[in-house]
Length: 343
Image (cartoon, rainbow, N blue to C red; front, side):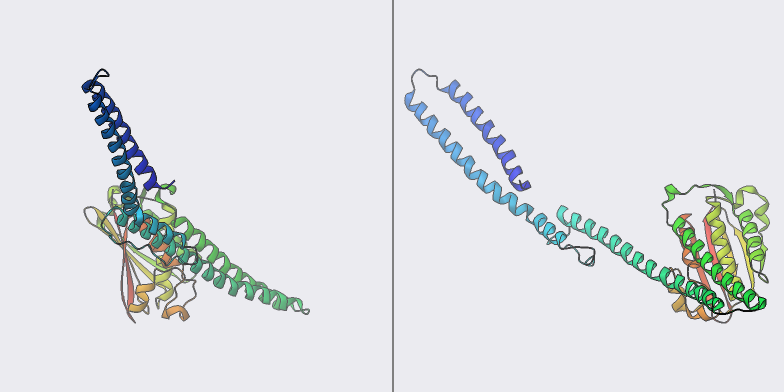
């Protein structure tokens, strides 16, 4: 049964029954059974008129309720037409300021988030497939080629080295994807603790220089860093170290001397970390897109990568309620500034 019918029946029936009961009580009090036959006949006529009046009110109330709830019916019909392949459609209402309009606006906001999620998922799957296809195809080709005929030990050694290089690319991509997935968890699902950013930066710089021969990281600490309270925030050590490693490696990759200069600056309630390089810089067009997953800008031919690092960094910074800014000049270098609130 429709809501309008339920409302009409519920309220008008209750009113009708109450009216009949009141009428009967008053009729017994005012017109005893002995005498007053004409008045009693008049009371019966009044009762009949009362019933007919409420019947009319019932019909009027039904149509009024139907008219009041017709926007809901229109919304239902519009929603029924929205499917996974037509998420771009939106619910329309005559009056966006009333309760029905607010309901439609809330539903449209939900559709916006769903559409964004679906598009991100499609792009993610497409980009992952593309990124995995190249190293896998190269790995298979190398191995198949080595099996076609007998080769010298040096040739086999070269094949193994090429295969290992492709395998490392796949490993790096899979690790980046797993880190990106962790960074997209809700804050309630990530273990947070009091951590020291200066210690995490030291660990991150050691990891970068150990994993990349020829890369150098210069850490510059503020004089206030001796105070344990100045460098502590509430965060996840693993994710923060992952973000710092990506920023340092990004500096080193695009800097002419493969060096990242990291400076820690303190204020009363915040800590800022600047990751600076003297590299090729980033164009203004690329800066607007740099935090999108799998995006590779004009510098993609300058150094290898899969476009996950910066998207991962931004997500981790936001997860810690931080702020990341970019200041870059083409041909002169780039500065990434990350700011967190201290505890």
